[in-house]
Every structure is written in structure tokens, then in C-alpha cells.
Image (cartoon, rainbow, N blue to C red; front, side):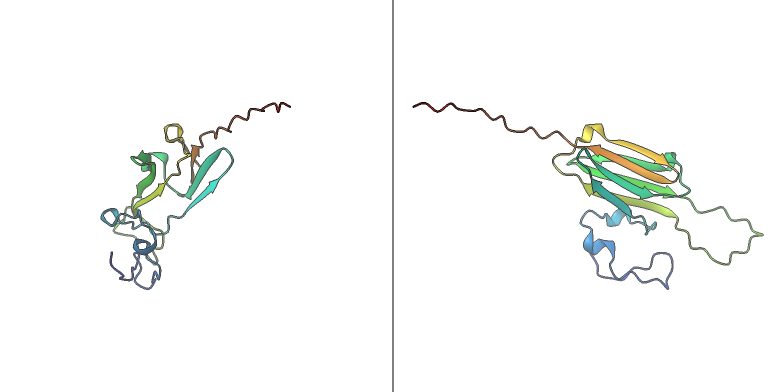
Length: 144
């Protein structure tokens, strides 16, 4: 794990918090050039819900998997727009390339019931939670 500043596609943009430092599940062998993939994770009483903005991507270009050890993996690739030799580009700011994020799911996740949906460029992954069984309480009659 190197402490080298990263420049994601644009050498004028410095990333002071490279993901290699703060994300223990980040795989350097599958490094993301789709640097700004940000995912929200919220927990409701019924499920863990992950949401990622993936504008312009089709569901066929995104893969959602649960790996061994309750690790949710979201990956894919955004292809670069085909260039026409007659085109003159003034600025290229949209990200392209592969992206990969992993999240270790908690013990209460039902990993066999994960569902994913893509609507209007937003990927939503829902991981239901196992029901917590409340301990059975048995009243004891007091004699005397």
C-alpha cells in the first residue's frame, strides 16, 4: 500500500485521501479509474440498502455479486465514447473505465435474498435482514 498521491485521469486533480489508505477492501489489482463511484449504504428495520449513481450505464454493464464471507461486490465498466477523427474535443471530464467497490455485510444480512434494480441511472441493491428472534419469556408462578 503506497502513500503516493493519485491523479484520477486528470493530473490537475489531487486526491488527498486515496482509497488504498482508508478502504481495507479496495483491491489494487482491480484499481478503479471510475474514481468518483460513491455508494450510499443505509440500514432500515428490514434491510441494508445500497445506492449508486451510474448515469448512462445499462444494467448489463454492471455486476452485483456476493462473495464468500458476506462481501457485497459491485463492479462494471463504462466504455469511452468512440472518437471520430473529425471530432475536436475541448474537454473530457466524464469518467470511464472499470469500477469496483466491496462491502463486508453484517451478520444479520440474508445474503441468499439480495435483490438489485437499476432505474434512471441509479443502482439500488437491497439486502434483507434476518429476523431477530426475541427470547421467549416464561412467567413463573411464585408459591407461598
